[in-house]
Length: 420
Image 1 (cartoon, rainbow, N blue to C red):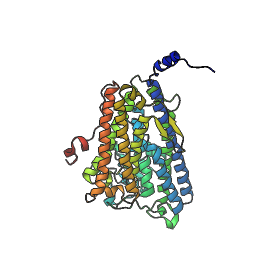
Image 2: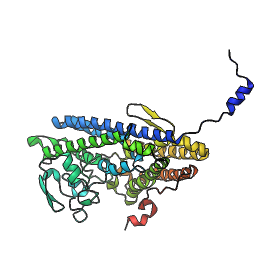
Image 3: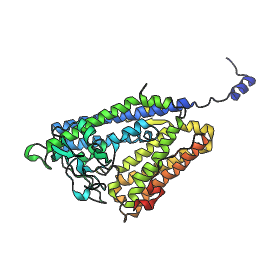
Image 4: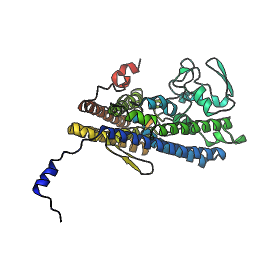
């Protein structure tokens, strides 16, 4: 039996641990993106199948199955939002799949009391266009033939028509509106109450134009699938998003930019603090389905995933590898641990918010100014996001990365401006 001599043991112990390779960290980052977008595509295809089945034979049971498939599809997608900031290919594309809030009157019938805050003929002439009810209409001074509702009509003619960002004609939230309808009960436990009969045939049809509503729902869902297929491929081997990251000498800044911008300006600010300041349930990210608590939870989880270099897929498969945390631990272990702890704390606050919502205190109820406990849950999560952003800033310094300007928000940086 070979014996390790004292000299050999000392030599072995003196051998330095190999440094974490930044290229390996970027590869893990790209692998997690590929896994997340592939899961998003897979669940969107499941949604597509459920919607096709419902439209082929509308029923209450099949309508509920389509709704449940939409909710499941949001879980992996929300975990990819950390890739939006720092990756232009994602940021340029994101508005096609996740834009909000939307002037839902562009798509279908609405009740004024439940309309999006940006709606109004002065601010957006297309806010009450109601494509479902109108086969021909005028948009930006031109007559549009919409007798056939297709993905091309939605993407090329209607989405952000007239340069108005509120004209959201595509993506998850357009589909959400078509499945749930408006949530017109402010500060209560109800989500949208669209009946399945809005898609029924003949005299059973409610809301009018059931066939066209079904055509819009199918077109929007088919387009979502094709958009997600594009992004999943972009992060695959040889894909343009992956190659852009792996070929960037300053690629680590992409990870930090995504983490910091989503934490601060986008999630803490625009998606949470703004709604809390205004006490406005229309500022919910998924207001029709009352799914906003899950949006926030999985957004935060996505930030934590890329830091720790690990993602758990919808089928339980784990994608992991050398991480930003590993890299930071080499540069400054204390900063690495502090950032990890901050992310863990935020996730716990998001868990408390999620559990409260699932127990019956829906997110729009938390926005009620009379609900101090609900407001405190939201504020605690916001505070966690802000605190973790400060730790991300410390990580930027520790890693020697050039200063990064994270996305900001008036709701955090200049609250008075929100009310002007």
